[in-house]
Structures are given as C-alpha cells and as structure tokens.
Image: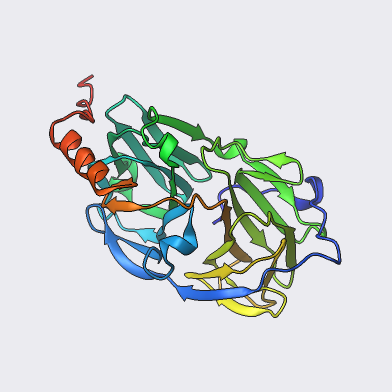
Length: 319
C-alpha cells in the first residue's frame, strides 16, 4: 500500500483553507467492527453499526477488506448475489478481483483500480478473487463503499464504470507533505473520474510522517476520515486516530488530518480515506442487498429477484 504513487513535488497543489475557515471538530470516533462477508472473508466495518445511517447519509456501508497476505487457496469472494437501489464502489489497493454480472458487465480490477457499479433497478453479480490470486496467494487490500441513490434514481438502468489507477486525479497538499488520489467529486476545480448520481467526494490520501493536511470541505457535505494504515490525528485539537478507526466530523468548511512523526514498522505514512457527501434525507428501508424507501419496494425487489427478473450471470465460455 498504496498502489498508485507519485512525486508530490510534480503535482498540482491544493491551496490550504484561509485563516477564517472553520475547521470541522470531532463529533465521534469509532473503531470498525470485524465481521464476515461473502463466502467467509473478514472485513472491518465502521458503518453501519458504529455510525448510524442518518449520520453517514448518503453513504450506506464501508467495508475494509484484507490488508494482509493470503496463503494459496485462502482467498474468498462473494458469489452470485443481487443488488437494487444503490451503488457499490470497490477501490482496490492490492490484489485482484473479478466482477461478473447478469447484464454482461464486469471485469478484473487490480491495485489502484476502482469499479463503480450502479445497481439501480437491479442485477445479480459476483466478486471473486482471480484464479491466479486463489492459487498463488498474495496481498489483498481494498475497500467497498455503498452509496445510496435518491428515490428518483433507485430504478436507474444498471451500469459499470471501470476506473483504472492511471485515471485517478493526483494532487498534492499545499506544502507537498501529502498525496491525494481523487476518485470522485471535486476539489478546488479538480475533478475525480467517478461519475456520481449523488454528490460526493471520495479521496485516498497518504500523509507523510509529521506532515499535516488541511483541506477546504463543502459545508453542505458531511465529512468522515477512515484510517487504512498508520497513526495520526484529526481536527485542530489533534485527536489521535489509528488503523481501523473512523472519525465523524462536525460542521465547518475545512478538515485537518496529520500523520504522527513515528509510524508502525513497514508503514510509510498515514493512509486515510476522506469521505463526504450531500445527505439525501429520504426514508431508508433496507433488507440485505436491497436499499429502497418503503417496505413495499423491498417486497417487490425480493419478488423480482426470486422470479428471475434481475437475471442470472451467464456461464463462463468453455474456450
């Protein structure tokens, strides 16, 4: 980690917020719970559970998967399962995952790549380790974010966005002490490659030991900081934060994240996800892989899936 690197001295720099900016305070600090997903692989999940859906809105779920070396034949994935009413965003730092779906979409993503799947009106898909990773083992590290869709887009036509690592928008902090990979959203006139239904900002930042990252942040967005690796601090008061923890920030128009001078062994710096979005503020009714607005819509999703109206993943070609 990380998969995409660059010399910050050669990148566009983001101006630090001015002196009148209101730095967002710490509202809540949580440690992600550990749970099993798919065919039995472990993930760390800061929300839902530790943070309510109301606080996370427009986000529904964040899973941090892997972060370790897998032995041969140890890799597991998520076999065929349906989705309706939201988007899944898989950002991979290490390893390989193959996606396939009932609409003919999918593909292989590797370290640095992002697959943005708009489930919309419904599909069946699978997320599995590639044959090579399964047989040989190797590093696996990535995150999956679920982004809610507003009522008007919940039955949108499913689509994929395959964003390779070289498409990420790379930026540097004002002093060059942090590298930012903008996956989606806009920062100071720079846009990430992800095309979103719901206005969000999605950034993976590496903050060098001892450096401080100060960024302007939209006042109509919420703000969350999740630590993928390393030790550091959030807010003006330098509240400590470490791997597997998420900081929910309060109101303001700037965020502050700093890396500790000393980092754990084999950790080059503080690795964080910076997440924010404009809350949708609509009723949320969810049942497993379906996220709608009413119970009747959930029942309809179940009926459609059981009746095969979301399709099936075609068998692999034999040659």
